[in-house]
Length: 215
Image 1 (spheres, rainbow, N blue to C red):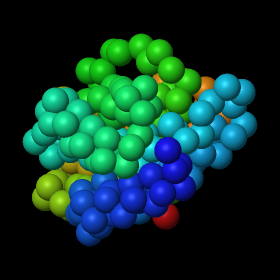
Image 2 (cartoon, rainbow, N blue to C red):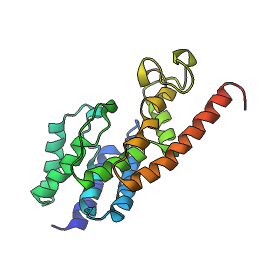
Image 3 (cartoon, helix red, strand yellow):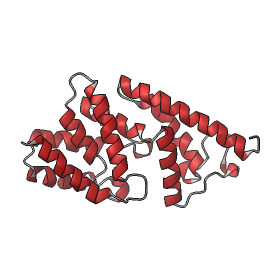
Image 4 (spheres, rainbow, N blue to C red):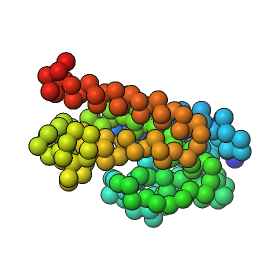
């Protein structure tokens, strides 16, 4: 198996599928997740960087948020990697990552069994928080026509809206983003997440102050 060829062909495949996607799960999201995942893998004893990179590249292919099922994803990933002469063992590792790391609205309670999956999940969650997470959250809010903020839907500042993240974009911080730092699998992921979490808290403090005319 020519690993460089596999990664090159997989890059082209994923870029073709996701370039220009408008919900924040586009090609550049994949690039950032891959880069972060590889950085963590290189600092983690026993992590297979090849599996981590493949898993990061393919983690959003045929995802449920685009209307696909786990079996759809298994078929699409298998067809790609079999054609590239990747071993069945590696294919199963990559499919496991793609089928088990998604947040799924907080309903995903699966306990990941491989360090590679834990690293890719951390990298994916890191891209949902911090400055990039803020940008992606508002991009997605515009994509689905959510208002930025509606204080009438809030119990009070700093708590999620009664109806969850469908109400406005600011609610999404409390429904998901501010929770992610405590859900990291790896020590390095937790360290990175804390910095990004602090960025979001600072942003929200400025947001409410400006909303209320205090700044």
